[in-house]
Amino acid sequence: MLPQYCFDHYIIAMNQIGIGIIGCGGIVLQNHLPGLALCPEAKLAALCDTNPAVLQKAGAQTGVTAAFSNYLDLLARSDVNAVIIATPNLFHAPIALAAIAAGKHVLCEKPIAMDYAESLKMLRAAEKAGVRHMTAFTYRFVPAMRYMAHLMKSGFLGQPYHFRSCRLQNWGTRAVGWRQVAKQAGTGELGDMVSHRIDYAHLLIGPIGRLVADLRRFHDLRDEQPSDLEDWAALLVEFSGCQATGVLESSKVATGRGEGTRSQDYCEVNGSEGSLVFQLERPLELQIAKRGETSLRIVPVPEEFLKWPGSPRDPRAGDPSLTFRYDQDVEFIQAILEQRPCAPSFKEGAQVQQVMDSAVQSAQEKRWVEIEK
Ligand SMILES: NC(=O)c1ccc[n+]([C@@H]2O[C@H](COP(=O)([O-])OP(=O)(O)OC[C@H]3O[C@@H](n4cnc5c(N)ncnc54)[C@H](O)[C@@H]3O)[C@@H](O)[C@H]2O)c1
Image (tube, rainbow, N blue to C red; front, side, top):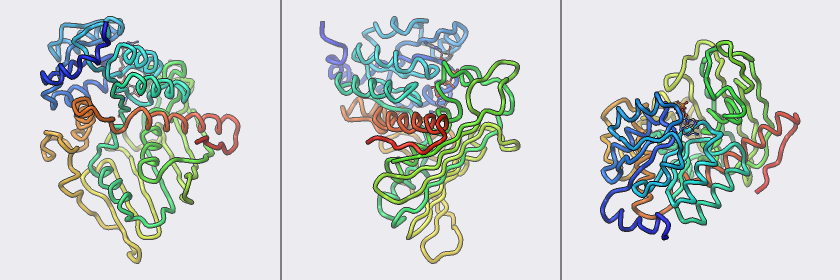
């Protein structure tokens, strides 16, 4: 029997890509369902979740009746051409590998795997099978980050000196479910929050060459439930091929900082010719300074960067700190239709995973770690 993806041309000609969602929790409701709703070519075909209450809620919300507790049942369906994997991190790799083996395109939540070796296996399998593969580095889609990346590419910064990111939230001592369990999440704040910021560093400056890191847990119990993962992470990095330095810090216990999009999420680059400052709470502007200036000025993001190319979204509709997230699913569907690589793909997901593994090693061994090319 021919694998499913051999029929994709036919399905694409019919303008329908069947989507299966595996793991129907928070991020699916927040990002992926509204994102898919923007894509007339995408048809939500099946749902899977091991929690019956979550599955029932997702079914009621979407009207999809093909609902499964075992992802293999979803993958066996011929009306599912592509899957979105949004389970706890532990399950990303086995589900992605099974989906790829069944010829499905895969959009996988970050961090894509539990370690670098797993992420490489996913990348190689997807490339070999010729399916589309995408990592959900959602914050690449923020208009201000897209504009920042464009300015970096056009040489605005001159010689890069510094990369800096700071993510400060206050989750206090409340329980955070699988996120506080090493067996299910792999890492704590590192994979949860810093993974996106490592991706910023790669996007804006280039590959990280070496690093020293520290990880710290302040709460062994969250709502009386044991936590064996870090609440805080910090990385001091050097980049390959340039002299730029990088400092990345992220905390779940920054008292008074709040949570989510309104809390501190800041990224700055400085170079010989200028500086650029990004803040997630102001997704439609950058702060900029050129050589010779003594303070930053606010620059609105130009029209062409307000949404992903081809996204049908009205960039002025809705809350701009949420709506950019929907462009991620638009990119996945467009890449399938156009039969081209997704941006970002599993390659970027694996590069981040390699840096994360090195940060864990550095923190354990209390030393600088070189990152192999
Ligand atoms: N890209 C982003 O900005 C972003 C934001 C939040 C979360 N995430 C990532 O998304 C993933 C899910 O996070 P969440 O906040 O939605 O978690 P969640 O706990 O709200 O949802 C996960 C769901 O997966 C289900 N599940 C667990 N094991 C399963 C299995 N084997 N098969 C099918 N379903 C299973 C759970 O029952 C749950 O409903 C994580 O990898 C997380 O890091 C990414």
